[in-house]
Image: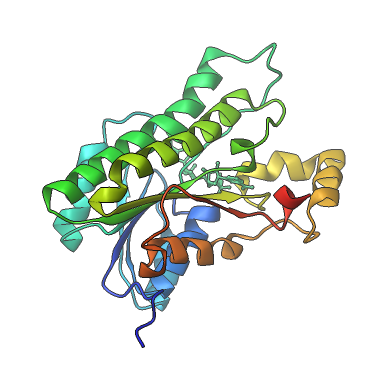
Length: 252
Ligand code: NAP
């Protein structure tokens, strides 16, 4: 019987694949058979090496996702190099921390533009290509525990990640009948650059660990399996879902 998780011959566009969760996801997708279009502003050298070990190719498309200016060029480059796109992982994200009483417009816009605006318009550009070419595909958005909870001192991050869950559901409603699966992964607390400030704060680190049933922070390699599942034929009837990968955090 064919392996329903096999991604051989697929092309996966992953934003922010140079480090952290995006790197873990890109490597897992490559190990399942996909070639990778890594979109971001930093050369993904380590990811490229790991993708090569898996026997797959990686194309780096240099782009900063603070604006949607690069969006159409990203799709063109991917299609020119690999002939198409099958999977889009909207992973790139940023965070700004400050008390809400002091939070600036700049910190609001910087996070919303990368975490929400670019996610929507990159999804739109890829979906337009799929519809124009009478194909379907898989979109995987990276949500957060702050898609469900309020958090503290990260107002634009909470707004953006709550929005990511909302547009995941909205796009699933609009595009499911077109053969496009839109789903989200909600990571719990993972050791990456994004959470360095939390881990360096002894009290916050302890209180976070106390609430995680698994008893430890997630590692980037813990997230890849969920992405492979949602990118694969095994998830063809999964639409508008959010899959927590959180060591049990939400069950607490
Ligand atoms: P990370 O190590 O800080 O990685 C963030 C990635 O996003 C990097 O590749 C970064 O590129 C890229 N990025 C940020 N701003 C960008 C911009 N303007 N243009 C293009 N790329 C940009 O953090 P991470 O934890 O792996 O985060 C990945 C995703 O998971 C984010 O959406 C984050 O919100 C989400 N998440 C993380 C956790 C966690 O516990 N770590 C939990 C829930 C959700 P550079 O390296 O060039 O900056």
